[in-house]
Every structure is written in structure tokens, then in C-alpha cells.
Image 1 (tube, rainbow, N blue to C red):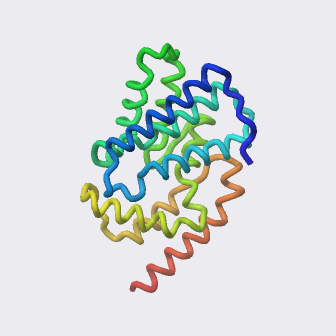
Image 2: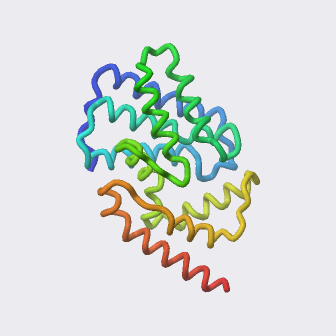
Image 3: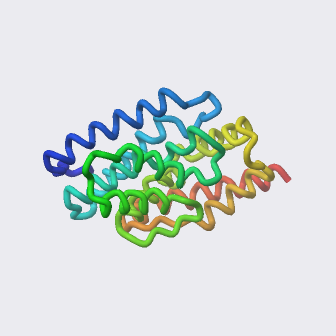
Length: 207
């Protein structure tokens, strides 16, 4: 359950500007090849990050950092291949905040959250852990089968990364992945185990 947000007036204004800017980036640069990394995915990550944050006692500043990182985290997918998109996403964020008077320590923390979503994820702070779990939330839900197929379609359409033995790669991803927040461990680990079982059965059926 998402708690009532308490951002403060200045952050509240910037929140709206961040959302509008990212929506503008997607309207300008999104292509039909991005069947998974579209605006809908970003919006879901934002919602999930705020959902998970309800399990923590975050300040308004921390909520702003988290939500902003969630909005920007995949914008780098819009302009080049998936490899290194996190750095490009951080660049988009830094360009947006130039001249807005936001302290460097805030933009640095936003950048750290964005970069923490790089696979394999190795978050070191609370906000980074929340965003990583929000980004991979689907791995523990029933929608995983759909999102797995969409990611495969996207990579094939972009032709930028080898698909290889998809089911084996997916199984390795699930086995190596872990949720970091107590909230997601409790809520999603069972579903992830179910998805691991499904992929294993699919691999056996294909042999």
C-alpha cells in the first residue's frame, strides 16, 4: 500500500516537471521495436518504487530521489543499444536538472540509483535497493511469462544483443537474481520460484 507522499512544495513542482520531461522523451524517441522498454514499463516501475517505499520511512527528499531515478532509469534505451543505457539515462537526468538549482548531492544520488539498475544488480543503499526491486518486480509475478516474451521480441527486433538459448538464459537470470528489500522478498520470492519451475518445465519439454 502506497503511503501518502510528503515531498515538500519545491520537490512537488519538480516531480511534475520530471514526469512531463520523460513523457516527452518517449514521445520523441520511442520506436515500435521497444515493445517492453516503453513508457508503460517506466510508469509501472515508478508505481512499484513508490509501493515498495511505503515499507520504509523515507523523507520527502529521499522519495524525490527515488521517483526521479525511476522515471529516468530507462530513457537511455531510447537513443541507442541496450548496452550502457544506464549511463545514458543518467546523462538525460543531468541535462534536465541543469540550471534548476538542485544540489549536486541530490543529482549524484539519483545517478547512483539509476546506475544501480545495471545487471547484475549490486545496489549498496536503501534507495538503490528499492529501485532495483521495482525494476525486476515482474520476475516474481504472473505477468513474467508475458514480459519475458516481450523482452525477447524486443531484443530480436533491435538485433543488438544475441538471443541465444533464450530459456536457458532466462533460467540463469532468475536463478542469479535476488530481491533486496524485505517487502519484495516476502511478496515476490514465491512467485519467482513458480516462474523458475515454469521455465525448467519449458526447457524439459523442448528437449
